[in-house]
Image 1 (cartoon, helix red, strand yellow):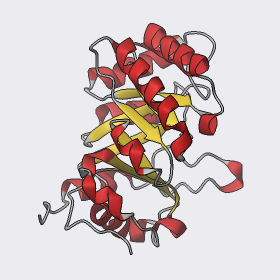
Image 2 (image 1 turned 135 degrees about the vertical axis):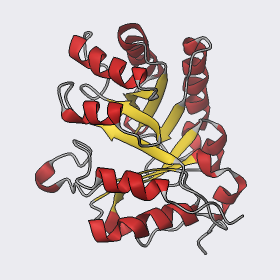
Image 3 (image 1 turned 60 degrees about the horizontal axis):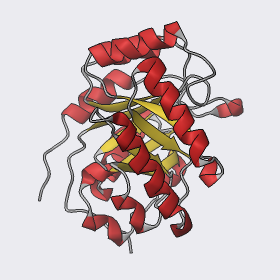
Image 4 (image 1 turned 60 degrees about the vertical axis):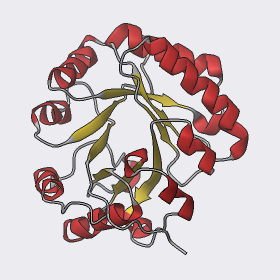
Length: 243
């Protein structure tokens, strides 16, 4: 049986940006009045091999605008080693001053939990008191133990066609909505309000919806949705929690 909260106000956006440093998305996000929880910075599937001054400039614009920037670390569903992940995190910190991270393709099974906790603890320690917001990008609901391992879990990442019928397991009710994030692509504009309602009732306080569909092998997160301004206004107008 799906778990529905008694009503959760959507609090803000979490935006993955898979775009080059010269893309207009960086400028738009830096000047947006959207409630942004975080923006994921991804140069080449990670920090790349050397510092990119253009990318550094894009990150600085967001940070100056008060936006939390996360570096993308690809765990490859547990296939990357501890040393590889920590090494890339060092590059993000040294080259761009990024101390928070989005661990993409995070495993969902119980077996990876000890290694996950080890990575998370190390990343927090490396931040040395700086903002070290950590998001696990599972894409589906993982083993419940992960809810205590990081600041946020991405428990849905995928198309609208699946999202509209998705369900949240009952264990999510034991955690605040701020713990969960939904990233949904291929959302037609007429269904945007419904998508926000689903996130609200499944208890996810951080969201991102786009009408980009990833057709032809393209990345649905390569640019902002065509209805970005409307989505921002719609989120601002969300009713307060009913509980």
